[in-house]
Length: 224
Length: 389
Ligand SMILES: Nc1ncnc2c1ncn2[C@@H]1O[C@H](COP(=O)(O)OP(=O)(O)OP(=O)(O)O)[C@@H](O)[C@H]1O
Ligand SMILES: [Mg+2]
Image (cartoon, rainbow over all chains, first blue to last red; front, side, top):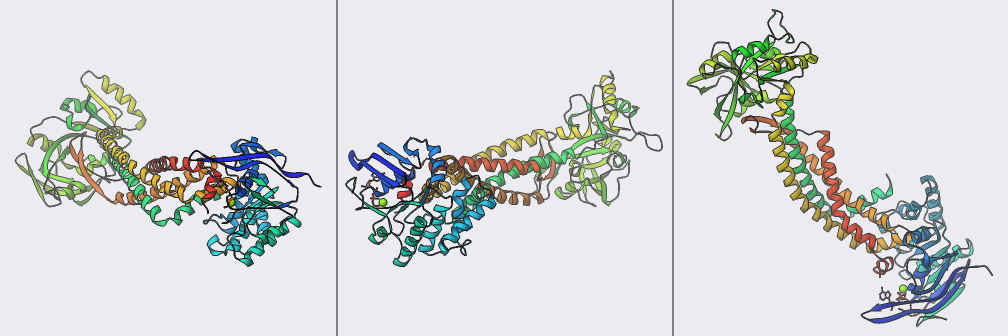
């Protein structure tokens, strides 16, 4: 059994809305080994996105520890955390979140601008990533010139171009038709099996969950 | 160009209408700012070029302009016979004793009255100021009431064109020639025979003596000796410096008023830029969240939006400067407060004005973009990303 890449230990998170306290996560623990592929399921509002955000280092727990790729994420300062994310996390969103004024190439290059790579090295990385998602011939296309499935593949290329430790995907097929969804899931499956990427995916779709090695259900703040 | 720089520009092109409006607003302010500086600069250039580098002018001590200077015939005689003065082939000095009188004439355009300088001089003036050329007619004949007119005086005032005449001091003065002094202050003057003007205007004195130095380097020696001479009570100045000083009060006035107006306008343009940038920030909440998630720091987000705002101001600068440069075709005529005579000059662009207005514009962009950029950089990642749904 490989060492855990993601270690969530006794994490609690709550929100306050008009003096009402909403407990989203209570004393939750989760461990994902290197090369794992975990699907998080559960009813709407159960805290799936919140948990994913904690793992990805864009949110902080009220208590407990989040250790990802050997780093205690919750203890990093704002700017260290930003650097850490560039290095270790690849994001895939439900609505792709591509920048409309940049081409597919420009969008994929974006995270590399935060690294020390030369423009030639960046070009190689971007081309590799876009070829991997099957869009080597669409580099100069803008998001509005692509279908939803193609946009999501560009987003996946952007997520993997820095070769991150963990890929986090929040309902990556939630906005796609069946066929595009299948393509995206195939791609995530390949990233996991061929390239050994650790993936945490939130989904409502049982077919998507089937692709994962482990499915966890989140309900009332607890994991089952 | 780096993606960080072009990214802001691309986003501006997405919102064509708001961008155009904001750019036009900033362009207007840059136009006002640059045009005012061009006006002041044009005035200064006109007067600087009125002098030539190897000429010196002798005036009464502390006289800031020829119009308020008085020298006796004897003093003028001393000044022109100094050893530093260049000589003509016949051994006489290259110097003119000049008398300035002011006459009140009507403008062609609207009939308003304006003061015009009549310079009593001698034919040597064309030797001293070799850049000035007769373009029509002929030189005045000494001993007669003939005059020649600078081209702007001829254009702007009734009776000053070739073949016309003006009435002053109970005498008709016939314009027998027109000269071009290359846009300098002389173009706004009338020239006649100094002896005639002394008689007719009953002023048996001179205003100044202008003389050519054998060598421009001898100026200090001449100045020292003449100013120390007990008979003289004069100031000796380089001709260029003398005329430049005459532009200062008016040029400063134009600049101060112009800057005040520009700053008031700028407040409007800055608010416009701010509104545009706030709209840009709130339209792109998800984008900001995404960039932050990917690893862009707060400072970078701040930079992204500041750059975008600076692009707005650079586009505004381009528009404003293009409009302002069209102004260099325009000639204005106004009273020079240092001499109270009417002076015609053009808007003149210079590299300093280009750079100055660019700085002014970029500062507007930075000020207008600052608060929106701070808001963008402060946004919380998780909340920004939730806006997608
Ligand atoms: N900023 C916030 N302020 C207050 N409450 C919040 C905030 N963010 C999330 N919540 C609440 O926390 C709970 C969990 O939200 P979360 O987005 O993690 O759920 P989810 O499982 O991802 O739901 P969905 O399937 O609809 O995406 C919800 O009740 C939500 O309303
Ligand atoms: Mg969610």
